[in-house]
Image (cartoon, each protein chain N blue to C red):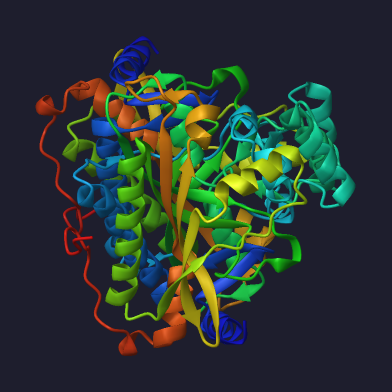
Length: 308
Length: 308
């Protein structure tokens, strides 16, 4: 990531980017203003996907954590356990709290004083949707857009803007019949490409090659299910590229796991379209430089500009 | 919180509010649209505080976590350790990950497989500012606004919208000389009251009565420093009230702790103005009901409407 390193280095020297801790990035100034502009454009693109499918895109908030049971139900632990980040609060007994407060090294003492993890920090925001629709029969296709902070601890692969421990994910999710979710994904691909064009970014569509954890039986099944069902939009960052959006068909995987049914009683199919806002920002900076005077003019939204 | 419970109950029945886990709230529909409107108005109010002080309010992103060392430097562990939430990822050795993946109860197994906490989830967003300015001499007053998810695990006191494990905090922070930070806080109080007026909410200003953890020596010192220096804006929620904003003078506490210096070499003073977006939303719903047809019209922003 030579170009990415150069961009990050320039922003660092200007004081517009810093890392309070490994995998966590802070932005200010023109870089943060750009991030916020791109965040809005991405939101607009994601919302438009449903409109393209004659649906209404319902905007949901994205809770900052989710129950571990939701990830278990989604077979997450078969596939990507190495990325998981958990939220734990301190044990609440007075003795523990006194020990932390009186310690010469309270930060270390606090790490020892955690209760078992109370929740998982989301590895993707679409899990909120499957969990909320669980054990229901849908009247029609559900289309939802939501944005939140996602967490994937990818060890020494973490790079500012390109791969964060915490990063910003916007998703649009469709749960319904096969035909609708396929049209939804096709609309997502069209909207993703249109967004890259509006930002004057070089892009290409690729079959995903996610690095899976050594698959167990369950993981292998998941891998098969996903085979050929995940497309990614790659944006150029110098000679390299980042996967800045993904377009995923899950067949009936989540419908079965969360018991979400169609009116005819069959398990629902699902698709999601996911954008990584930091990576879009990085690709924009790589294409157009860090000097805002050289950036192309950006619209504020994209509604109904693409017919898929 | 009888009125709060009624409001939450109404939103729940409409499917506009649910709790994926204790202390975590999800919104959709009109409730989420209202939250987003109020979020923008709060952001505008927070940014205007600096303008009122003839300053430029620098917008920063708010990283999703911060180093435990930052909280230690801020003496956080002396005061509020019982609220702290930590982010931990799984140990990365293959054996641990295999055990999680193959377990019949992977969620429970994952809780056992955590590495020591890597970071703290922010109890307030202003810590990012003191940490970023640490060990520097300021040329002039720094004024920053930022918004992020904050975490305070208040055990069985958690209530939807009124007191979340995770909630949305917008802050404006000023680090500078005594006179500037006092004017900044005064402007914050004026902007907070003006926002309540625009939303047609009943409010009053109160001295804060934060429930402090049994103070250690350091905690007691902090308590003294804060004495009389924290004002809160309380919004009516039926017969009760929520502290929806706070206006805090820290004297030189953070300037000394983080070695932030004025041009004359003295430690800088600081102030922060903090808004809890869910509580503003709750107070609005309590005052105007959950039916959007009965809500007063809201402006999109408030820039330069108040002269403090």
